[in-house]
Image (cartoon, rainbow, N blue to C red; front, side, top):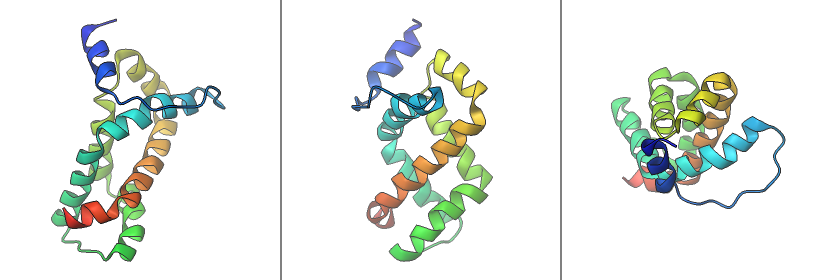
Length: 127
């Protein structure tokens, strides 16, 4: 295993996951994406707050719930930034898998990001 890969794996938080998955993309979601999103949580929230500032958005907590999915689904630069924050943590093998299943992984990653940002809106609204 390349040194970079082993270093990346040691930085990831451990998350208990189920043993059986419906398919290999679902397994990737739980064993790779979830730990990376947890490790990058602070940057994920900071990025969304920065996007709000750039776009002169000051949503109420209720309005924020609607704004989050809209932002992640329609603003390509924001979405690309998030995909980069996550894919930069992939090992070589994981990145090869990602390239083969990019569309499905992006769909799952977007859903996970929306839920992560929504569930912590109190934090980024006050950052």
